[in-house]
Amino acid sequence: MNPTLSDVLREACAALAPHFERPRLECEILLCFVLGVPRAFLHAHDNMQLDSQSLQRFSALVARRKAGEPIEYLTQNVSFYNHTFYIAQGALIPRPESELLVDAVADLIRAHGIKRVVEVGVGSGALLCSLALLFDSVRFEGGDVSAQALVVARENLARFGLDSRVSLRHCALLAGFAPPIALAYANLPYIAEGYPLESPLAFEPREALFGGRRGDEILLAFLEEARAKNVRFVACEMGHDQKPSMESALNRLRARDVRFYRDYAGHWRGFVAEF
Image (cartoon, rainbow, N blue to C red):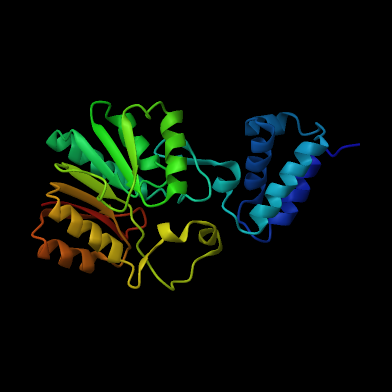
């Protein structure tokens, strides 16, 4: 006789409890993913038996989660800006604080009537899709150095019906984009090399995390390129301790109307500027 959903969840929760704060929730999310049902289904059918194939898939996912793999990669779903996006290894999992960058870019588009926007380092495409869904008359383009990330981004564009009006390029920084560019924004790697990562981050692409020996090198290179290509507005996410470095670079590049913003925890997290 196969185990019931209740039995399966109880055993899985016991396995995850020493490692995670909400083992029951995580187990339910994984089991819902395997069965293709909402969480309410589990509570209404807790005595239903789980077939052996589903049990095997679920057990494998629980083992991967126990090893520290992010649940977003296991379910291939991530929530961002009130949407659910496809995610897979090879693309950085978008964080809630990056929603503030979407807001900052959206404010610039509205305030200045911008019609062309470029994202550098699109990753999963979650930010690009979120903005394209807000502004259907704006031309959006994006690029990334990672071919794997672009596969994920293209899947998200297709899922939201945006692939016909949003273009992607395999390129570094602004190399693939011809001027004039009204607005370029980026959530580039900004962690210093050698900085110890927590377990979940170890599963994410290193090239999307580490920004150089100090951590700010790629961000600084982006600002240099934006200035050289006469980009009018820039918006960037940054490390919480990189405000002095970014201020110095923006002053040197003669940026004006520079505004830094904080994240939900009160840390400096990004900026917008005009060249």
